[in-house]
Picture (cartoon, one colour):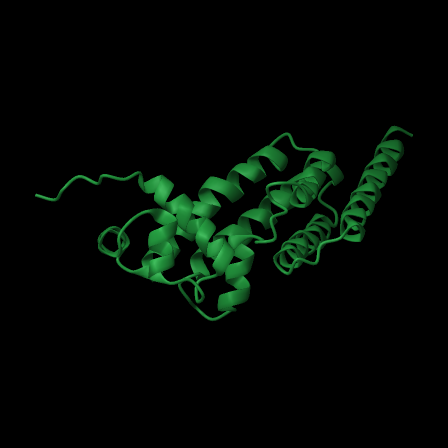
Length: 197
């Protein structure tokens, strides 16, 4: 009979996802993961198979426990353009301005487009952002051109995350986000005026 686990799996996955987000997959050792999670190598391997297995689970955990709740908060069923703008602007505030970027975006950059241990998590995370942003744009501005507007916003959002990882974010980037959303709000006002006239 297998021994019951004496650790909190969710806490281990949270620690691992932060470690992978800080260091990347290639640059983190199993010893580093032991330190980060508090588990010995044998426990990590028993629970997750190997380093790759732990990474897959940590990336999935990141999408489920971090990306999805952020989207629920700022791009949920009742979200406005101003709510969506906050999704972007919070990237410039603690704790998200720590310079480590996003595990999904970092993994996309590290592993590229080839099929890899990151592929499923990257597709899931990026697809979720795309769908939620498009939902808000479609609801706020209508269906005409919604895909293109959402694509532009997603490019801006993911670009901010890349710049964050590179330590290159500036006030100019924050101003660009505000300018983009001001333009979208003006478009919404024009549509409302045309609808009422």
